[in-house]
Image 1 (cartoon, rainbow, N blue to C red):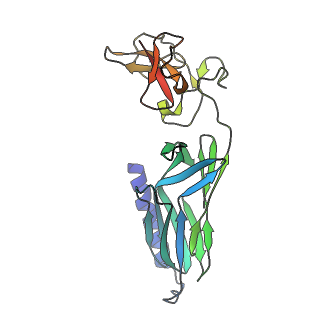
Image 2: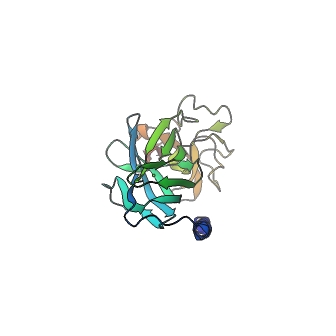
Image 3: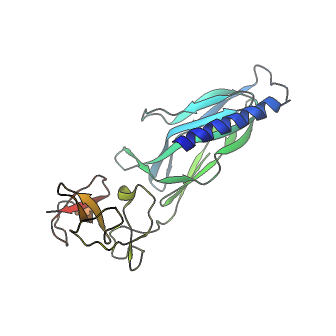
Length: 251
């Protein structure tokens, strides 16, 4: 969070310095368009939205757009004078509709730079683009009227948790994202057996985690969420964990 604040201050200072050096005459008072920043898109049968979006715009006008917690909000919009601008996307998160209308966060990375330049003409539309990559998804978010469009291309995930062939090979495993809060990636298995005391989350053998159920942290077997309520092969019953994409095997 501190790094985000520092970046925001430095970027705002840089853009202010650029604006102070601009000798372009100001546009007529009535020369204006509208910026529209769509927050949702659909692709491959999936619905995505940007959450916690914050867009800083600098040029003939300085403007900041922020999304709200309103689930019905699908776009941000505001009037904007014509001219040359810079935009910085300095805060965002990506969410996916889980099929019930509820949006859940998905891990994502901003692949393109956060700064984009664009020009607004009177009565015309200009589009800027931001590109994100998420686990299994590449998302392009596109701003004179200023209009931002969104497109998504889906790619295969790196590995598949709990699959017979999880894609990781011997000595490694594919932790569910609900456990790591990171994109899927193969992780080297630890050496601590199930039921033995552990110190950290990477100590345990494959498909186990260091969990304290009240008697101290021990390596506890994980199970797929599709097996909730069923017996575990390692013993116990598959019970819901802190995240809904996996469970833990409890006595």
